[in-house]
Length: 69
Image (cartoon, rainbow, N blue to C red; front, top):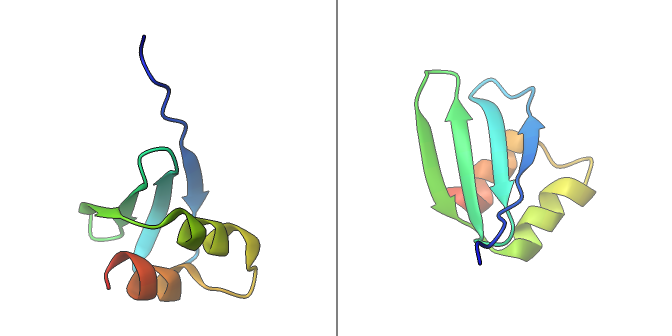
């Protein structure tokens, strides 16, 4: 039986990131950069939730603090 891996797609207004895809089941985060590159990172689910719930948190600060740390 195949396991589903739902994705949450966030289009950002950041100057560095274009889009952030969150995969909560596998704890993966795919970041698409304005330069045309993309990168994959393992992120805790509580940090994914922090990005979704905290409206004051900017996408760029979240990427620097939780994905790239």
